Every structure is written in structure tokens, then in C-alpha cells.
Length: 472
Picture 1 (cartoon, rainbow, N blue to C red):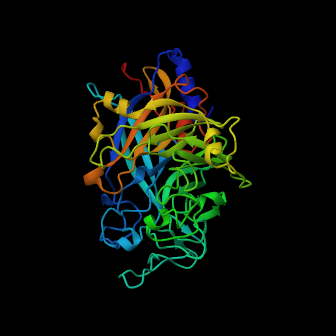
Picture 2: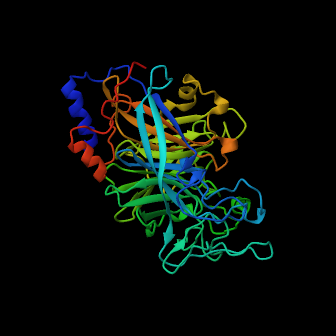
Picture 3: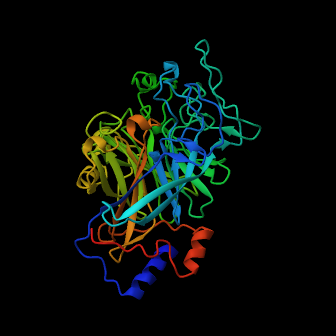
């Protein structure tokens, strides 16, 4: 049990609070949005000025729900993807721009709601920092000659600091998609190391999994993934890479390693592909486990139920995980959301499918069970299906709370609004509460508490003190 949970437990015991009831359920307790920072509306804290190739500001705040990670106290990290490419300007690079890869540091303040509020907590997300991602060694940047595009290299590059960016032509055409010297990077999920000093980010272009220094944003490690995930013919246009004649094996463009989890002991990463590989049967997705110390990998199968893909994975413990399976329908797509579901899987005794394909790989896929139907949960709380974000993506277990005098855990769920607030709505975060009976075996990541958290705990007043609520 972590210091935070221990503090809550002491408070509960002192008050003689009973154990959670057997009929407890996973419940939506808060909903918050992030639309600005101290730098202004829809501006992050990168300090970047000027505009991107499509005319949008280089410090545009958006897409922060692609991936989220809890780092203790009220602090979370959030990662946007490759940048704002919904504004047409050059189809030769799929309208991608030299948006520097980054992660955002957020404070997620949960406070009791007032009388008459629809949800028991009020969530106030605040952006406190923006960290740009770079390599200490030179990267490969592109240039589409004759089409009015210059180098894809960010102007901010300096000796010893070469920034990753979203433009799709930032690659070496003579190597496969796993080349770690490519500057193109499409972050999709983020997790923090147990000591809090570094972060792990998964990507769709490679797919890649990189480790970055949390303070400087500099890459400190590249993990070599199984060769069957990579494609050999690279192109700045996704439809060229998707063409099976060009790439009969490897990840499908824009459907790479969408999700990433870390086990509570901080020793293993678990990545999951958004869709099937070119060579795999329809709906068979690959899970890749990575031993952080040795780099050893294993692959396991996951079969979609009704969703069109997977957006994230988060660890319940060292062998059970929640998987976010969804469609692409809802707010931002101009349609009605139907499938946003969280499934539990267990890798205990699972068959390694690294060398399996076809029916053999499918038959070896892990079992799964439905834990939470998000569409129903949102509908039950007055959010109609056309207003449910199409891209429900980021998952992270967060701080514990006291609800009706009972200690409950939290699950944060975030949307990726693709940087188009006027179409897909704001950066939005939903908080669900659950007990150990709702998700048996749950173990919070063994994070080193931040100094501020230790100070509060040391006073005997754990974070969230006094958050006692009316019945739901």
C-alpha cells in the first residue's frame, strides 16, 4: 500500500468507517475541461512562438487526452499526438506539420461539489508545464522538394538537442520504420517510471517506445520492438504505407502502438497496437510486453469485440490490465457514439504469439471480460451519445478519494480532440470511482511521492482530506 492510500486508511479507521458495500459500482464522479493556460486561451506553456506550416500556432494546446499518466498527489502527465493536421495545406505530407512532440504536466484538483450539483466532485485541470521531447544526437528530417515545403527540422534545434516532430516525411527511406534516428514521432500513450524521473512514450509511426528524462525531455533510451511490427516501405502519405503491396507485414499507418501500461513495480511496459498488423487476421491485435531492464519482449493476442480499435491500456496489477476498446463515433465525428468499453484481460498463462500468425495466433488470444460500458455510464449521467467524445483514449488510475465515508480509487479517462475544439469539443477529463470489489486485485503503481505530497501526508492530513460526500 502506498503512502497516499495508507494516509486515507488511517483516516478511515479513525472514523470507524465500514468496508465498501457489496453492491458498489464504478461511478462517474467528476468531469472537467482544459481550454487555456497562463499563456492564454488554447496555448500551452512551451514558450514556442510563430506558426506551423498550416498557419496554426506552434504552442497550440490540444489533443492532450491521447495519453495520460498519474505521477502522485494531484499531478498528471498528458501527451498530445503528432499535432494539428486537420487543417488542409499539403496532402503530400498528409497535412502533418512540424509540431514539436511534447508532454503536458497537469494538476487535477478534485473538490467536493456544492449542493444540487450533478456529480459529487468538481474537477479543475490546470496546465503547469510543457516539456518538449528531443534527442541528444542528430535525427533525420525530411523535405518534399518542389511542393513548397522546406526542411521538417524545427528551427529550435541546437547542437545536442534535436527535436522530434510530427511531420510525416521526417524519416530515412533506406531503413525500416523502426529506425530510432527518424525524427517523426506520433505519441499516443505515456507512463512514468516509479522514481518519477523519466517517462515512457509509445508511438504510431514506428511503432516506437522511447524513454525520456522527465525534467529535460531528452531521450535516454530506445526500446527495440519485434521486427514483425515494422514496415519496410516508408512514405509521407499514410495510404501509400497502408497499401498491402508496399508493406505486406507490419503496423498499419496511423494505427501503431496506441496504448502503453507499466506494471506497479515499474519493471515491465505493456504496449498494445490499435489495429491488426498487415499480416494478421482482422481484429487480432498484438500486445507487446517489454522488460525495461533487459529489453526482452513477448507478444500476446487480443481480439476486438465490437470496437474498431484500442486506444489505451492501464495496469491493474502485474498481470491484469484494463483495455480501452472503442469505435470512432461521437462528438468530433458528427455521429452517435456506440462503443466505448473497458475490458479486463489477464496475461497469466497467456501464449506468446511472436512467431504465430493466422488462426493459430487468433486462437491463442487472451480472454477478456467487460468491466465498464462508458457510453452507458455517460448516458446515465446526462451526456447524450452525440456529445460523447469520439476519441475516448487516455486511461490512468489517479488519487484515492473518500466518497460517502468510503475509500475509493479513481480512474481518469480522457479524450483526444485532435486540436479542433470547435468540432470535437475541449480537452476533457472524466473521473470514475471504484472500490477493490469493483476491480479485484487492483494495485496502485509504486511511485515515489513528490515532496509536496510527503509534506501534506506528514501533517496527518492526506491529500483529499475531508472529501466526504452525499449518497450517489
